[in-house]
Image (cartoon, rainbow, N blue to C red; front, side, top):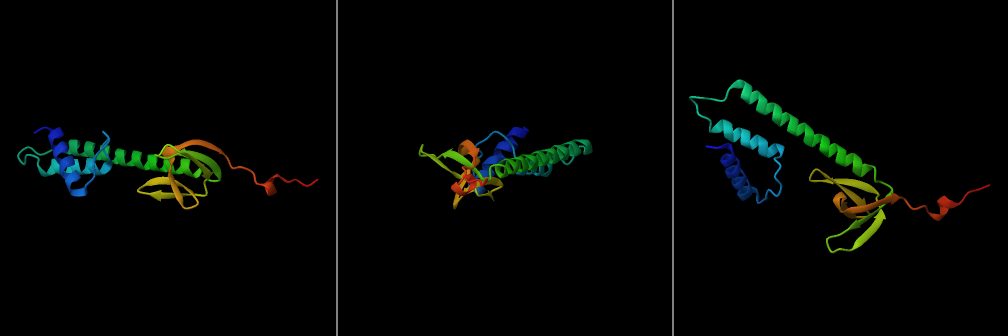
Length: 142
């Protein structure tokens, strides 16, 4: 049995159970771990996986997890750097909106920029500008 068929069956089963669809071609850490467990469960008992193969796969899993953690951290840092800046974003209806980012909220391990009570996906941002100065900030005393 080819590993791809196990992966395809696992993905199909997972989609039926969770109701999710796999839209990308990348494999996340959860899918990788499920595939590894499935591989171990259905291996030939007379010819089990060698220790070095298992260690190599666990190292790949660990690397994948660390890369995903690094990516999440970088996305959060990028989102935090936009606080107090004016952004312009495009919604799915084609209209453009603008506002000053007041905070960042995490949802499903993804940062969203908050303007008032509106959460904006960073992928929709088309322009970032410094925060516009208010009238009191422009006044100077001599």
